[in-house]
Length: 449
Image (cartoon, rainbow, N blue to C red):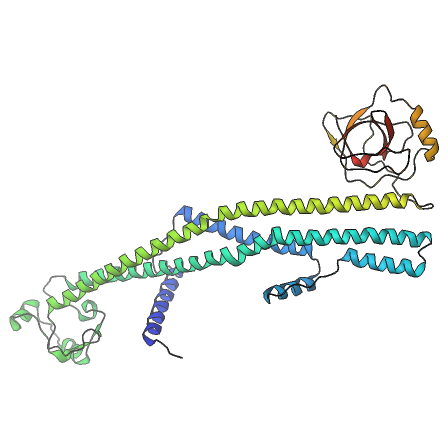
């Protein structure tokens, strides 16, 4: 492979500078550029959105697919960009077992007939569950995944880039500060000889010969003596000073004090220029990151819409399950020798009125037992007059098909008059619509005040 050694060395130097700056900040040995409060709030809001989105996504996946092995399999198919094979739902599998049991135990027996009816209902429930899972995955899970795998990765990338720009900016600030401090020492005036170890540029080191010459002097000469000795300017032999700066490659005869000051001035100018460039890059990156973080509000709006769609699909699913189970309970109530319904009241007595609208709770289905056999009940209903008090209006929630002549067929959203008779099954009411009269299940009604 063709490596660019210069670029590799430059990247390594930048990485090392950032690592040093980061470490010094952690130990409190370097200053850190702080972001404004609004920016910090945006960062915290974005992190919170990401964390809660991950939790909601994982728990929704558990709700739609409780089997962890199946979830792992679907994850692998998704990563391999392959279509997930169709999987039988638990309801459909239960329906299959019940149908096979009825076939083997006798489809003409009461138990076999009941197994067949329940199997058909479970099959419909399984199909409704499959539709719900498919709809919820498209309308709810997919947008959440797209945010975590798309928008959030972009935000994280720009945040890392902003962090690097900040480290570069702080490193430039520290470099400029050190350069100005060294320049101040190098330009100080006095009668003492400047200390080479403090005032020399960082790109130069003092040779052993020069250090020995200066250190062996028991009584260092005054600055006036050095000026008298070197009237043209303070100079040292060239072998005393070793140039290490790559820009200084040719042999130099000497380095005077004014030149030393010029080197530090150049160093300060260079540090100031690097600081301006770093500040510009940091400001530009901060603005890009800020725009992405402010886009979290749009993400919330999108997730809100998806959440509404998820609730709608879940409501549709449970409504379908509710209707399927009511139909099953009606069918089972027609079989002789079967016992359905409950003896506990499914709703408060009709006499206990409420000033507000009373909605029926999740129904358990009407009981197959009435006041009397259908023929007698029909005769009685024609002769029964509504009580003087205790009648109420009710809105029909779902369509209802009358099972026999004693019941009243209902259409969704129509208004009827209902009342109760003494000793009547609490799961049923007497409903009137015009000249028609019959029993209606309470669970299909919304009682109005």
